[in-house]
Amino acid sequence: MKDFHSCFGESGVQIADSSSSTTISNKPPAQNLVTCIYKYESLAISSFITVTWIKYLIGQGLSIEIESSKNESLCKFDIKPSLFSNRKGFKNLVVNTKKIDIYWDFSSAKFGSSPEPLKGFYLSVFINQEPCLLLGDLKNDAYKNRAIFIAKRENVFGKRIYSSLKAQFCDKGKLHDIRIEHDTNERCDQSLVIYVDNNVAMEVMHLKWNFRGNTIILVDGISVEVYWDVHSWLFGNLIDNAVFVFRTRVPVEGMCSNQSPFETSAMRRSKDLFSQGYGFSLVLCAWKNE
Image (cartoon, rainbow, N blue to C red; front, top):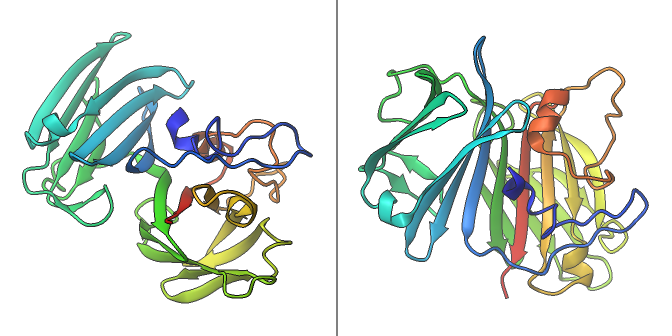
């Protein structure tokens, strides 16, 4: 789970205290990856399943991590390009008396520019023979997917325009195109515009004074908090990354709904936010191409 917050942790946004400034890493990602977090609950099992799709120079890869609701790691399994190229496979594990079965079939998988497959694949996770996660379209009716999609992190690259593929703001929600445009034409008054499905969702003017902030937009009738931190684009190195967080808002009594993820002393995991009442988190780490 730690990798999901690499944008915010040791190699990302560094938080010293609530009044300190934020530091963005100057280390570009080693590979292109998309990380998705799912929460599964039943009478017998409660767990978080993290699926990371990775695009290496030598091919596609996949990492699966399963944790208990108490943040105890049950297992982590990597499907390297060598295994991925075999297209079909399975892995059986026994951890703390729990039997974990992972099955995959990528024999007909189709990919676009994202490491995440578009169609023609199947990935399933069973815990104690209970179907916890089913991804893909090869066997949609085989088992009911009971895991809830709660968080996603994606690396995006560009010079002025950054686009996210398959963005959604709730489990099984409508897919949206998100585009971020950084206008650098005016040296003294740069701007930032975020589009959702080619419609302007928000605009930030005077970016040198507003390089870090938050606002609320509406998508599909859902209130979405948007946080941005582009300090590195303006005052850092070219290889530094900016961070954008889209988080569906489900207020909880007694919680400060205006709290920013950049103001906490320790970056909370998206699964913790989900447990506190937030529905879904999308994190975009935007890297500038030279």
